[in-house]
Amino acid sequence: MKKNLLKISVFAVFAAFLSVMVFACKKNETTVPEVVETPSLVKVAEEENETHEEETKEETKEVTEKEPEVEEEPEEELIAKDLGTFIFYFSGIDVWGWTDTQSRSDVNIIAAVNTNTRHIQLINTPRDYYVEMPISNGMKDKLTHAGLYGIDNSMGTLNMLYGIQIDYYLRMNFSGFEKIIDTLGGVDVYSEYDFTVDPIKHYTEGYNHLTGLEALAFVRERHAFANGDNQRGRNQMAMIQAMIKKVCSPEFLLNYPTIKEELVDMYRTNMPDEMLLQLMTNQLVDDTEWTVDTFSVTGSGGSEVTYSTPGSAAYVMIPNESDIAEAKRLMEAVLTEKKD
Image 1 (cartoon, rainbow, N blue to C red):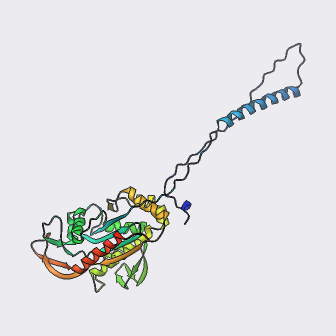
Image 2 (image 1 turned 180 degrees about the vertical axis):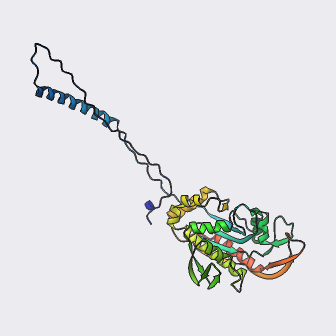
């Protein structure tokens, strides 16, 4: 795609307004002496015409001299910058309405991002994972319950689990997710299975074009699968893959300012606007497709007392340590790889 067609900066437009001159012909008064012969009407008309032409030339000259020169503002050149690597956390909370509500985080996906190699590694961690939290003094709880104590606690819990440092987060609820998908014009997401969520939609194996409501049902469903929550996690990562592909398209990037206004209060993030804009600029300068890989950690079911419900046991998923180690390896591989 030609760079001159991919401009997201707002350029200043200068308009020059030309004045419309109304030529008022000066009326010449001719005094006729009593003794002097009266000039002919033709001669008088000729003299008046000559006077009018001289005045018109002078006025036209003044307009020409005063007319401002219009200088076009040069188009700003898009410049790619090295944004290196970072770790991003997607958190989906299980409520409708107000985005700032502190609630359980049912979607917990980490993205290790290498902007130089255009490589993203997604790691899904099940909501019932039995893990320590920064605030729990060694006591364990379900990962989803970490969200009850705020986004920082959720990030800290995953940092402890994987030995990483999450840089940025994006947090949204059901309402925000549905609105974002609809604002994007829907997404094309790949389903590994045929399944139905009544009364919303039947999903076929392969690509499905989904509205916001249909996408929400897709990422929430688990009862239709033998692997339950593990398959739900894979579907959630498939949705993120579809969204990444959508937002990397020129159509989205060029309309980002408008889309951003429509999405006010639909999500929360700590990523600075400057970095978001630079990510988009880099994509416009180099529209190479991103490689997005996925991995889900697993575990075994159990019943344990948790930090948030100390009075009774609850269903939890005991982490598979080999999966944890593999997730660490995959993230480290992406963060340290070099561009060819």
